[in-house]
Length: 107
Image 1 (cartoon, helix red, strand yellow):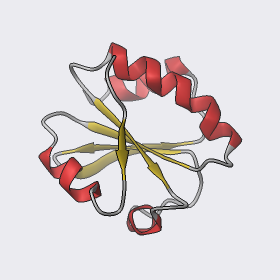
Image 2 (cartoon, rainbow, N blue to C red):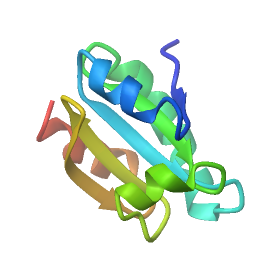
Image 3 (cartoon, one colour):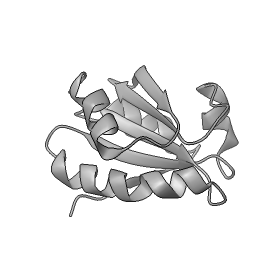
């Protein structure tokens, strides 16, 4: 099974800049109901798209600096990074087909 990377303020830049494929970052929080709905979808996609994409999670309560830097105001926010730079994003709980459609535009 492909692992979802846990990002922190400390390792955020390093992971994104060293990634050899696009990285989808899930900005989430433990108390967020829609975030919990998206989590199993991300697990499935991390396995299905493991050759094309890395999926990472960032807990916004414990890592405020990284969330503020990307101007994350609502969660869940999903931001797709390529070569360390954000290229697109979606806000809210997406279905698997919506998320896959979003990702396939870029990978």
